[in-house]
Length: 118
Image (cartoon, rainbow, N blue to C red; front, side, top):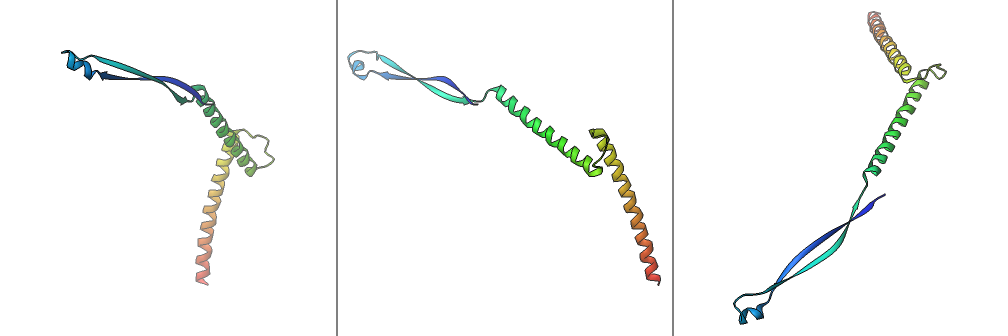
């Protein structure tokens, strides 16, 4: 989706006439102008916007898939699968698991102390 843009560049060269300088006191000069077309490749702004929109859609789709995967990991038969309820349930599950870990650590400490006494 590249477009080419043609730019005109010009260069000017001056040539002095040495043979006429010997016959007259003033020297005459002539100039030659050379023009050439140069092609410059340029992406249009709208093409960049389309690419950004495509990248953003891919990012949103990936996030939505990850939310669904997280919701299915919590409960595959959940009635609500909106993002807010998935996040709320995930936070609650993590809090419950952290509480359970703390309880199990405390139980382990007590059991290991009891086993040392025996």
